[in-house]
Length: 347
Ligand code: ADP
Ligand code: MG
Image 1 (cartoon, rainbow, N blue to C red):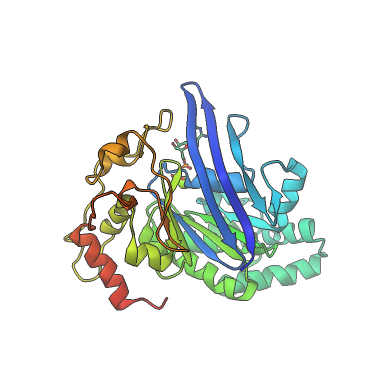
Image 2: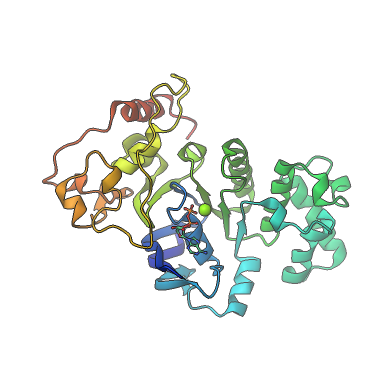
């Protein structure tokens, strides 16, 4: 498979009145053509900052890439001029943001909003753009698309508006489509629907997808690979099977354990205790240690490297060191991992 995107040792910080917030700390990942990568983690773990960096959309001037590379088809996005980047945003990489209302112009007809990009970025004439806009609305599953072209955003329901935003993002036929929690933080049902919609479209367009969510459950049967972020780092990455059947990082165990299952109505749900660290002053050693009941002495002194579990699977926890005690995941987590393997989904 060929690599579309390679993120190498990415560090992103914000200068604030209180000092430097280290939002992203040494993130590495690749994205292949046509692949769906999920980035998962609690609020504040650095998911959005990572995706904004890919688009060169960090809030300037206080948000900045401190070091690292983001190679898109071999060229570094970090060092691109803003005009070069504008071309990439209109053509190669596009993004669906959380709030569909902020992405739409309330005073402009839906059809015109979709046509705008087609005319501006792809040089289409009006009648071709109109045809294409209609196709896109149909592609994202808007019923009676023809009559919807002349309606305004407020005439659409929240879910339909988000579909329009996806249609706009797709207008340029992007090589990478990024969706960052594409609906309000808690609405995971709609997130799952949007992801399914994107997957359907992917079959026709072959674009790669980066789907960002705080909810591991949303991506279970749809992502090819999952990266789990904590405190600005990827702490575990693997195929969806690696993460759901064979998770190795106690933080991933925590995310799995906090997922309701069909069998038991969530009676054995457990929440990860405590809260993420303050990124103004990230802790020494393993940032997850204070919340990790399996933490060892070394966790408070030294950061764990990425240990290789298999060719596709890596996790940053000292528990994978050859001298570490062999720890089994908590029972509730094991049940979930077995549950995934026995029912298997349709993956
Ligand atoms: P997530 O998307 O995973 O919820 P973010 O990427 O938004 O998390 O945030 C990562 C870290 O960066 C957090 O500690 C957050 O407080 C900090 N951060 C995000 N945006 C800003 C900003 N504009 N100014 C200062 N700090 C920020
Ligand atoms: Mg976010």
